[in-house]
Each structure stands twice: as C-alpha cells, then as structure tokens.
Length: 71
Image (spheres, rainbow, N blue to C red):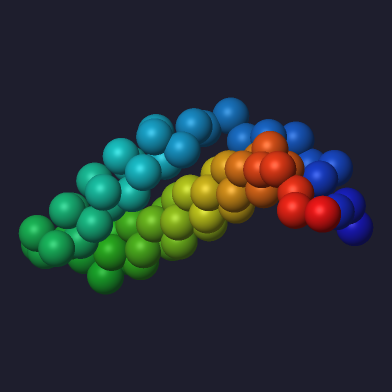
C-alpha cells in the first residue's frame, strides 16, 4: 500500500470539486430523485468531500512547511 505522499495528485482542483459538491447538495435538497439516483449522488458527494479534504490537508502541510520555526 502506498503512502499519501506517493499517490499522484488528483486531476480535479479543489475549486472544481467544491463546485461539483455544491451542485450535488443542491440536487439532493431539491428532491424528486429516485432512491438509486439519490444514493449515486450521495456516493459522489462523499468522493468529492474526500477530494476537498485532500486539497485542504495539502495546503495546511505547505503552510506549515513555509512557516518559520521558533528555536
């Protein structure tokens, strides 16, 4: 199993994933979907949330690496 640092970066940007996730939420909140459609959207939303978290974690790591250390 590879570590998180060895995995390639996703091709979807944070902004793209966030926008698609917002669209998934809007569609779920609007209702009128079949159970299967709702489950599919929910699963996609979970994937997108993980992707957004990946980008946020990477940004946090970069900020921590760039911050001056106190000696």
